[in-house]
Image 1 (cartoon, helix red, strand yellow):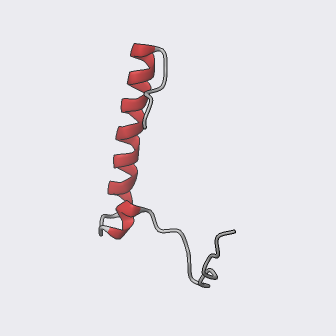
Image 2: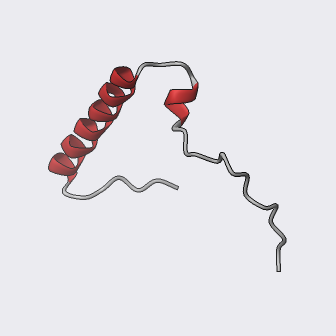
Length: 52
């Protein structure tokens, strides 16, 4: 069994984009763009892109 370090109390989730100093709006816009791109892909190919 692997041993894990105990979790720190302040381990709140921070998205990567947030850490890079972008505003919430920018992060949301970026997310919307990638979602739209994904939907376009699915419409075109009829399946989800396979990521390794």
